[in-house]
Length: 563
RNA sequence: CGGGAUGUGGCUCAGCCCGGUAGAGCGCUCGGUUCGGGACCGAGAGGUCGGGGGUUCGAAUCCCCCCAUCCCGACCA
Image 1: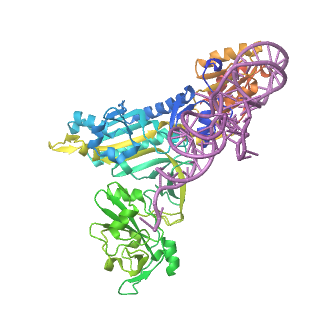
Image 2: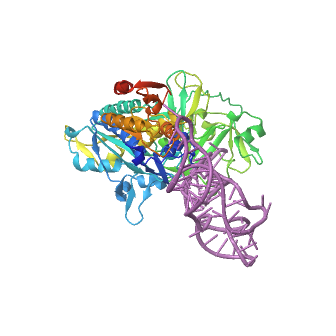
Image 3: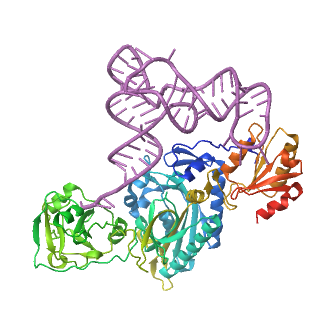
């Protein structure tokens, strides 16, 4: 590809809207161009990279028996009403205004509906169906360039199985395929346990890269291999011993005490002795969550526990339900329609302090078993830095990460909702057991850049580079340079994809800067200086290493470098 | 959705506080000189100052409303 005839709109200045390196470099190198918040045009250079990623994915998916589909982005809203996901996606899903259609944020519903109408027998299973397709999600706050956008390309695949045992096989096949995809792409990644969230299902894992630009918090243990999304992470935090020191509760006046810290200070007790009450509202009933001290409610854990959507209560609702406001709530004496869930840290706790459900009053010496009704105990707290690891006791560390892939064991949630059944060997009808698996294409590219750049630009590897070689004619006014570089270009183009910077109106410096910015791994520099010795220069983008190569040895040198 | 910031030629920004003919650098066009790390000289083209309303003799500048973009947060009683 001759640079002079190509559309490679490189930019010298850092775009003011871009904050993280990958975003800045993707725009500066002319890979992408923003059209709106979270909406990007893919320019030729960027699209070549994305296509390379898609091809790697395609190969690995095909090698585990995947069959490629291309499903519609427009979906009838009725299909999504049947699985209840119009509600659970809420505002994240785009709705078409002048038709009863939505823009699909994922494709479990379409896949399941196809399976429903065509899969009849256990003999037709298992299946792995996938596609590489545009997804639409109305992110409230797009950020970090293509890392969180409102329209993006995803490889999504779906496994259809007869049982949870064979689902495990399909799931593991995907896990292995994903590892190969990231390895081939050159990403440094790790795998963590994750929450299934709105997808539902019995288990899931995420493929993450560590990055301060990440939106997920990951709990890692440096000693053993424990790594988990904060959303489901657990720790071995010590429970304190609760001693009973009184046979009944005692109501105390606590004026203007709203927070646990204020309460502990006011009563001169340790924070851990206080129990915080948090109230959520579901479509069924209010739920009072009891947490120890300043422990935070992990809403992802709560979602998994409840299996239903919920929201934080309003101040008005609190007064109506408990007769008291925030800061004075507690589990003692609450009405029967309030479900009380208590975090495991407070299991069987005695002598704790809770709100009295009377403004500006708290209860001391509360014995949860004696004085209140606890409907369930569960682990619903957020793990904190330096707590002991659940499996080895070592101090846990919290890091930020970007999710580049997520695999789910869905189970039968969608097949049951849409009645996608098969007949087993005994002629009984059973729901198909499903898995779903996603990889974001642009994210792989962005994450790769986050891990591979320097002050001059991107540093591509052989697998993802948009072109194999970057040929630079230093001075297009020199007949010698023109003749030689044209000849080299024609020769190399037979075996490689080559960018040939043949621009006659820019100086050598501009060409060098552009080459470093684009980040093609191998630069071939043709200038008069070396041509006088029948040579050209090769510069390796990553190491900066330069070699002078005789013209006749160029082909073999390139071959060697490409091995 | 809450908080903060920004919006001025293609890009990066100044001008706004203190109202009075719209600026710089880069990029672009033309001519010339240069030619191995974002060259130089000269001449040009290009902007309803995000949109609407208001105040004023006069608004990029002051006031109100809206829109867009970016950042932080999203619950902790």
